[in-house]
Image (cartoon, rainbow over all chains, first blue to last red; front, side, top):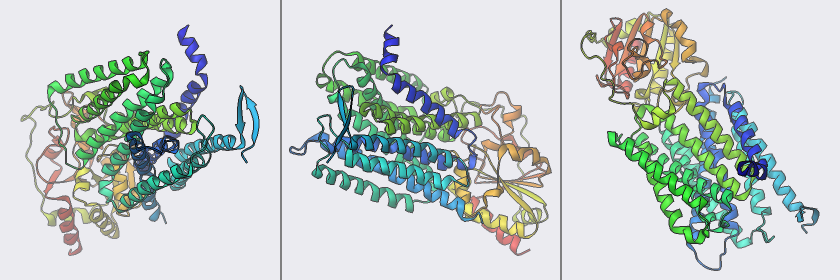
Length: 103
Length: 480
């Protein structure tokens, strides 16, 4: 019963998870080996979506007093940005090379 | 200005809230389409930009429209702090991404993956005190985000260290048990925190202990994994970072984060499985790390003699061939020989020789590593042939040139059931009419096993650093 209750309560989240997994698998299968690295690095950049959490966290942080949380929050933001910007930039650079000599 | 446009379940929602959710939907769709486009060579670059656009949109709308539960938006001072932090991260990320050498790409991907994991870990750590005691599901996602993020972070850092040659493979038999014990303690503490009825503020000690445990586990879990398994580990860690981000997404009930994270998690898992399949090993086998040193397969009996080849003979052989296949491995990356290899193939093509590159899925240290390197050296995409497509053609190949590859051409995969790589798909270099192997010395491959291809009567060895060997070969061919 508890399990069923849990399912009912979080049915939307469970739907999203199930469908996202399916979409992820579907999108990736049959990718040619030549694209494994850019794909991984592009996906890696997408996982930097955690940055949204960082923005929310720091966005509503109390600035009137200094706290460890604020420092860690800013750190999380910087890390997240590194992941996002660096990830997309490096993927673009790799793909640019693939394109160059395709006359 | 932010007009209330409706009421649902007793909660008022405004134009701003609606736009925010709408932007998350668009961002999530851009992630999906971006990833889809990324899996085709022609559209890949556009796909990456789409995904980046989705991320930019979600970041911007969050900054402008996100509201705390009490309804207040993000204050201006906080906006500046956020912009400054993002600015710092962007500048560093951008510069490093542009400057880094292509051979160092696996290291960079690991570093960026580590930062993503660290961000998830920190967000979860900071959100934990806000959780409500007894609310199992929200504590569950927070704690999972923390643990998975921490493992991805420290694991990726160790992977980086290994790829960069800073950290060696440390594999002691007791480590398997030690890791198992560590994992059990970590899981037990995770469960304890989740089911504990205490206020989160009373559990801060536990959450920090858990974080420390997870960080240690990340280190211990990557430490024993051998170099040849790096492509598997990197894509696995990549997958973990995605899952950690998704868990954090549940904390905020943020669909863009959930979908983006799970998408990456699933895609990373598939890639991991693909890599495992290419090595004919199970994921569990890679993690437990039973590879390396294990099969000191039948030394002696089948050994033939090693035959070296003179540069001039190699030059003649190559010049008068019709079909040549180059099989690159990690040695090519280490020697930075991709540019000179391309010079060799253009030179030979000029003499009417057909040259192709045979790419094994796990050649190098990252999925698709060889493709990136050769692309950097301007080798046309059409010349890179995947293993399954080249193998049927191998008996017609006049010369197979193996540059810095070892295990991926080891015929023991076919005929030695005692070999640890038995059953792993390989490039059939042994079927070619002649085989030239460029190698630094008689060292074994990462799998630490003897390669009988070296003793094949059709094989000639060309010892030395790949770059200088090919350079000499090129000038030899030119002077003919």
